[in-house]
Length: 145
Image 1 (cartoon, rainbow, N blue to C red):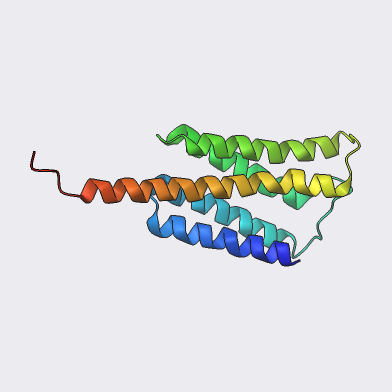
Image 2: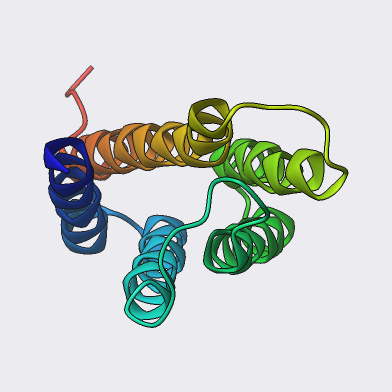
């Protein structure tokens, strides 16, 4: 439980930072992550997490992330959304493994479907930092030489 709370706080802080300091692509990525958080906690308000079979809420969240980051990767001029989409594809693949009834223990399924999202969060942090750095450099006066 403590890990889930820490992960949520970290994710929300990343979303807020990207929204405040990022460019349009980072803000869109933050919006996708926020939609994933809302669907996660809204869905688990009605259904409890399932790790023995396909988790329908987790599948919906990962499909939202996959579709959102694929769209962002196609419409953006930045590379990080394509990496985020590929990480979400890994999460979605975990549900396929469970649907095909390939023998995977419940804790492994939990980590397979959740940890790629941590990679997406780290990508968004890096992209926001790079955008902020580039934005600051563009405002520096040019040298007199």
